[in-house]
Image 1 (cartoon, one colour):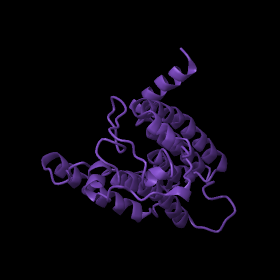
Image 2 (cartoon, helix red, strand yellow; image 1 turned 120 degrees about the horizontal axis):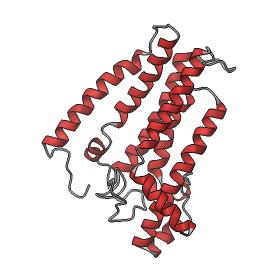
Image 3 (cartoon, helix red, strand yellow; image 1 turned 90 degrees about the vertical axis):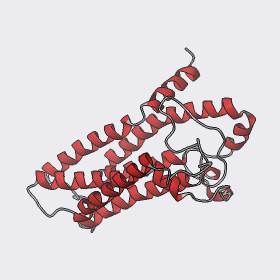
Image 4 (cartoon, one colour; image 1 turned 60 degrees about the vertical axis):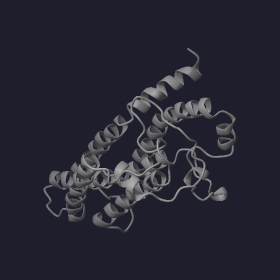
Length: 251
């Protein structure tokens, strides 16, 4: 099998199983975080910031990634972007305005920052660099498979759009206003678990890390935030399943 076909096949497999990466990253990061906590090395690098404030900076990085996802999903039409079907790629139109006029894969940019936040909690530059390389190697093949699909479906239209547009690092020079207005309903329907997941992960790191060291000065921002956002998630999930309130034509 030629490398092009092999990469596409691997990318499609990774796309279908892309929920595995967050779990892998979470387990590895949490294990290293435990190691740092056991050796009492947390925040041992030379800068003036207490644990609480540093945690909030890391949390802000993850929220920034979530905002990128929300902006992306909120401006896209039906059956593009968002959470595509697990069985394969899905696209009935080519997104080329809004954030898609800055970068070809904005959702994966958002994902990167969402997971960079927990990685930053390790306070180890080599771990953070290793995480970044692992993330890139994983998603590079997914992006390759997606672009092969889009190239086959939209042909020259896709090639003309992609040839001057970066894959992952945004270029802000040629921003084009989104064709569609922002849809809060679509965001609530498609991204309803994002905020709860971020709060839960940071609460998990904080509680487990301090438990290992025998501390009880937990970050209650994460604990209370997890409770509130989880209730909101359950409400939205119920509304989405039992009603059509969050449905919006063409979105």
